Image (cartoon, rainbow over all chains, first blue to last red; front, top):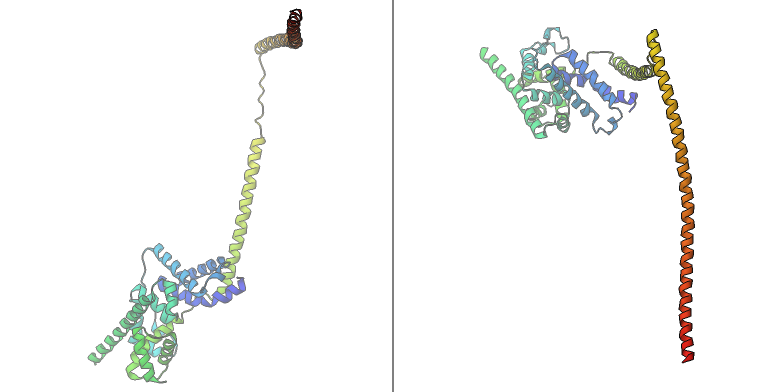
Length: 170
Length: 193
């Protein structure tokens, strides 16, 4: 695989690789460095990349493993508080982002068990098929389905609970 | 937008039984302004997912960084190879220098007495060497004579062996002659009788 082919195959993945690394590291700078390192590692493996069945899941798996290694080095997993400042966002959904529901969903997602967060990231944010998620995570498809369902259920029930509380208060 | 259909899909979404396409449809539906009131609370879910999926790699000049990184790696690789070779050559040259370099002889002037003693012993050594040479020559001559004697002995031995063979032949002839004589006497006796 030459440089041109490599760039065409892997460069479009940089944002999702970054998001996936950040999902583990909760640190944008570290996640960006990790992704750059991953690209260099992939480049060094360019001679054998043609034999890889799915380069995208291969790259995601590399990012996952590197992120876990980095977390081990840190020893303490830092669970950063929600950084989002809804008032600074200027997209068309300003109103929604400023809402309590939006904050609650973000918080609920960040409070999910690590495995469920990873699975929601891969399915609902990156849009991977269950088979691809199984390849990346090493989990069975059934486990993935069950955990995704649980994660979504948790978020849903928190939203409903919040709505009920609001109704009671009014 | 068929919200009845969307609601059905949404129910399956919570249970984890939707396809990627159906999930994309949900994201699209909930990103619209006109979401039915009773479903509005779920808009936040799809808005958060959409926002999370829009997070970008922070470096804008990613390609340049990557190009620079692989170039640096190549250069580092070349430099490291050059340094390896340079180190090997340096070690080789240093080793050769120390191997070839012999310590310079240190001469020290001898005193008169030391010189006399040295001369005396050198003289004795020379005399002894001459004597040894003479003895060796004499022994060598003796050895040569012995060799010659040995050669002569071999000649005599050969002559003796030959003579012995001849003698044996003579003895055989003599025995045959006696046998013949005996047979003749028997024959004569027979004639006489």
